[in-house]
Length: 350
Image (cartoon, rainbow, N blue to C red; front, top):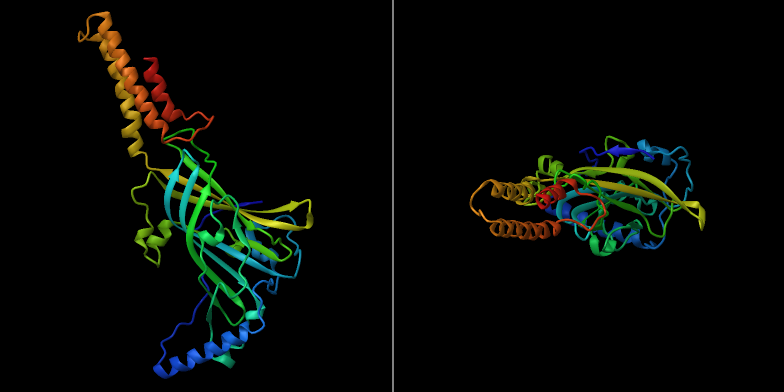
């Protein structure tokens, strides 16, 4: 198992778009109708497609394991890519994270191949409800894949290659790590992607292009500054933003099916926290309260003992209320959150 650091690049299938005259447009529509009828005439979307799976090791690239021998020549290999459009929300207390993403997959289905010269069509768009689509699931997601990523059009080429892109929301159940130095922490959340019913015998799963240069991930900054120019992908009014994403490839073997391993892609999303709010709303107020608690010992505001005790009790009440406010931002963990807790501890001791 090897980890590939995310690169901000994406390999998309080439299209040969062109401008059609009115006459050509009519002919093109007729050709597409005829081609669609021919492709789907005896097609069953419930049957796993056939393809050339002899290049399994090449598909794995830098993710290749010690033994990457082809398990089966049946089925097809699916290359998976996530485009992280925006981090919508992070709920530390409940361990939830919501990501706006584009899920892109590429595979081969020889049943959908055709002679481009016969139909004069070099690409066709078919509904994802009409053709076989990969059996892919995000294991620690709250919603089902059907609810998170609705069906869209799939782009099919004469070779039988299929490109399927769907926008959706990843609502993840996270066990956040990296919170020890809150609020100067780097939150990390992992999610696993793999087949639900189909193992490697019928469906291989790999990062797109399978190399360290293009591991099949794109970040919001790339979408905003790249060719797409989607400025809306940049973070806005959020406590965190996506910093890096890494992906690991693994094969899980279950006792029921020792000859049918299940490929799994494990993505780790690292978030960078915008610390300005937490410094001003959490740490600095606590330090201020600590100083006030000390100053009263050297001032004549309350010369009697009762006045000083009353002042200290008031400060204790203020710190307790502020502490409850801070805890609303934090999950219930046994880990020590040094940055957030140390200021409270110091104030209470004083």
